[in-house]
Image (cartoon, rainbow, N blue to C red; front, side, top):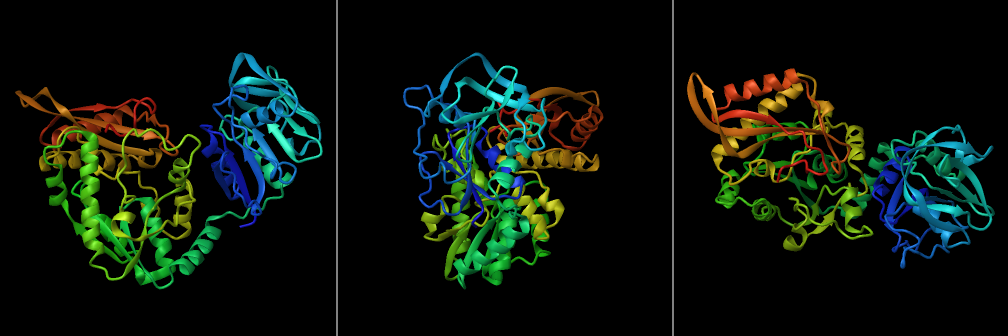
Length: 509
């Protein structure tokens, strides 16, 4: 690809959002830390500098050498990037009298400037900075202002370097997409050729060349990522792809059978392995969330390894890794602090001495779904809510028993089926039930009961990084609660979780 966009990450919380907005324009982009600029820039047509939590006035601010980029490629410097060019090129950056966060409006826009084509005065933008550019850098021309920020945008004469003090990537900048398109298409001449169809054609071709006639093993989960990865690989290598779907005994009600049935109709070579008893035995007596996750992860590795050894001459392990995972591993600040470990097959390559193939590693979640649609995968499968790798084990607070799993499967089934019946499922990003480690007093048929409490959780999100609880109709919650208590033996109380992320995580463990 010769029409890539390079995004240099200075540690902004919005960097991934910049990439997603660029991809929405059907333009391919990649994120690199500012400290690891690619040596070969020949494939890039434009560069975007992200914002940053750092200040250019700090003792040791991020200060990369941009000599191989500046004047050679079009640059759009966002927030910190705009202050970077001012501070290090004869301008002046000082602390703002007031912290400039939130909505603002462009009160002045210079006429006939390509960066602001089809953007009118009073356009809303989103500010997020505590420093302001007081004096512009050398040879700079002011392009836009707000009522509080004189130098909201500028360009440097003699080169295609543009700088803005607001964030076009966020939803609240109403013409942000237009500004990015103006920069990337009108100014930089980047082609809008990054489409699901183009990705499928290129990826299948690359997989064929890379894998040849070698065998690949893939651990299916029933989720969107592993399914799309499997179909892509199947198109490339056919019968040489061996898929393994492990039932850890912690799936949703009837999910093992229904997922295997779905895959059967997709022509994939899938082997189902029911290892429920093995997993439940490994979890016996464990209550700590991290211990439960590790027990499940280790058991999965053992089961997967046993099954993979049944296939002769396997060379590759396929994984459904997606781009946020890749970005996280090379971010400016390094991998995030572990809030909770995640169950996947990431530990298998060294253990099994296999090469790794990750066909989705450059896609965001929404792009994975679009590629799946291009591949003809059923929309009900593509629209499935995310489900944690450890399954119901982290939705049962405390120790795990077969009886607790049964109770939660029944509760979860009523809740999820209810969302479908009420046409609410597709309006929710993720939903599930949690079995609490407490009992409460109730009364049924004039008799006192002392039984389990379950919590229902439904959130809306785009990527799971942040999430808001969903305001489900009272009538739906009332009916769901009544159905659960009447039908699921062992439950006498239902509560609804109205916590957002942050501060709460989506899963309780």
